[in-house]
Image 1: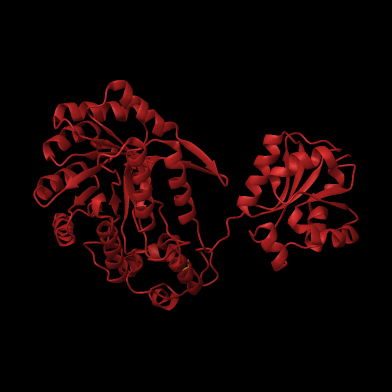
Image 2 (image 1 turned 90 degrees about the vertical axis):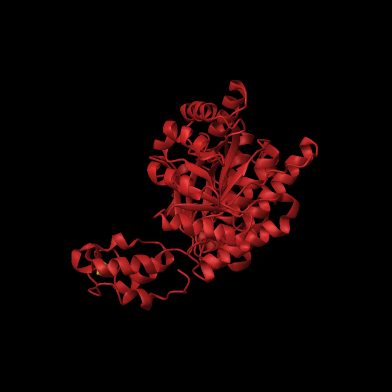
Length: 461
Ligand code: SF4
């Protein structure tokens, strides 16, 4: 979608009956939702009728994102990459987060291979209520032996439900593995200027997405164009990850993404792949540091899939955290539902604490309460997803809102006391709150890590 569309551009192709079958009050409202990608064309039953087939296809084309969405894997175990239509996140949002693959190769001992595969399977890190994981396993042919590569792919496939990337520049090696795991729709890496025809045939035969690789941008365009001419639509681009010339790598990533989104360049309108492994002879620590730094740079500008070597948790942690932050929706605050939560098994004498519905604050407070073993009630106020300081400053957290929330959740029936611990940064509403609600406001610590000590010293029911 190179041209910025407005609702009117879409509306002219809709049925214009305002029948409301899509759940929207008008076709114009539906058009606005389509642009925001909050609904799909298929949600309009009228548009699915044969009379509208032409308009449906026209709209489909109009609304297609500049970067095609590519699916790797099958069934529940799929990873979607690409599907992006803006350069800057604040213009809409980024849709499919950068997928992270961990590399293995066919010369690893069986134990070491399985250990790495299981590491990917088991990798889970919970942050702001979201489970962050690794997404794929990239199997590289080091031996160059088709049979050995196929055996390795078979072993990995038997051990994991994660989608695979099969990596070799030799079509014979790739086909050996595809014969074994091709039904799982792995990503084939890679077609080059010399092999695009053979690798393209494999992609078609096994119906798998395929990577076009070239260090040079015009060559990359040619390889992608050649694959497209074979009718292949699921392509991923690797513009080369020469870590000795990072500014050039970054330049190529930016050039490809701008061409796809701003110039509607169909040959470059595909997800981007980066391999940030530092291959020079530094020691292990330097290598890992470099790898994670390069990976973060690529993720920032605009890698859709990264193949990683490191499995150090200290290196992966900042990457998955960066990814989570980049891919939040800037149009919506990261919020949780307001209401009353029970932490542990509270009784009528248990403390009552207050927090906002900003997800980061909420999960931090819950985690501190749980790790301190404090059974209590937590009253979560709807502050439009803002934290304590911002909501106090902006008026989203005030005494009357807390008073209403206390009433709404019938807090008075849950406990026999009338005391509520409010965050230190909301001290200035304590007087008003006591006047309006009749509950005593105890001003708690500035930081929830101090709650345990605060409750031990100050709380008595
Ligand atoms: S279902 Fe289709 S025709 Fe009916 S209001 Fe929605 S967009 Fe318009």
